[in-house]
Length: 220
Ligand code: 0O2
Image (cartoon, rainbow, N blue to C red; front, side, top):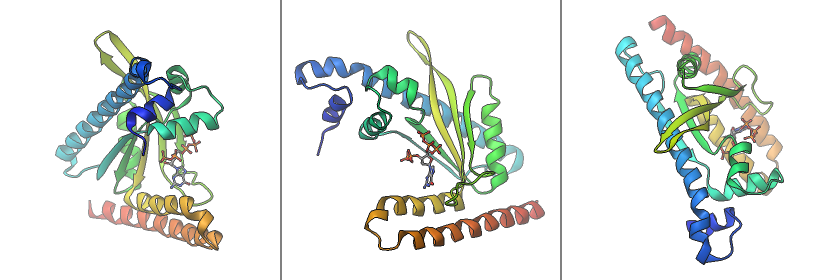
């Protein structure tokens, strides 16, 4: 198995271990910037959760998970795009290196939290893909935002892009099963039948999400 230093060397296209440490510095720094951007977004979300809890006596989201894309996935994606692997190219062309997934109980909360987050004046919305209002043909639903956020370093500020995915618990449950299908498809006899069954689950879970939201609203 590759050590992270070896993977980092591959990312930077380096062969010579002696110069590798020096030359890997920009890549390590870039990854650290993305980590910092994730911390900023996470803090903003946690603040909103606390405030919402005090004002409305409930949490608008259940959990958040964040990750920085693995070096090997960065390499694969850059190769797929036919781009030379440099830190500038990575920053300019990949928007999902830092990713946060926000899991809400109800669809309405997704739009409430995403709006509260994006109206903050240090956040710029770069792109929105609303797969809840426009689900993918396979049944995938989630709200995807690419936002840009400043991080404050000793020598000034840097603007970093973060992908924020909002889903309900049901959408997340469905997506994890669909993810398995994606990776096991080639070894399955009838992947299309499983895909059809999954699509049926997606339709059922939409109905359940909105029915439960309706009940929640009646209770409130
Ligand atoms: P991972 O491992 O989750 O990061 P782009 O990222 O813009 O180059 P694309 O497909 O235009 O590529 O972006 P899009 O549609 O915003 O989707 C990006 C991410 O959404 C995926 O990341 C998945 O996490 C999730 N996603 C999108 N479509 C599906 C789907 O049909 N099923 C499931 N389970 N997840 C989906 P990655 O990079 O594919 O993977």
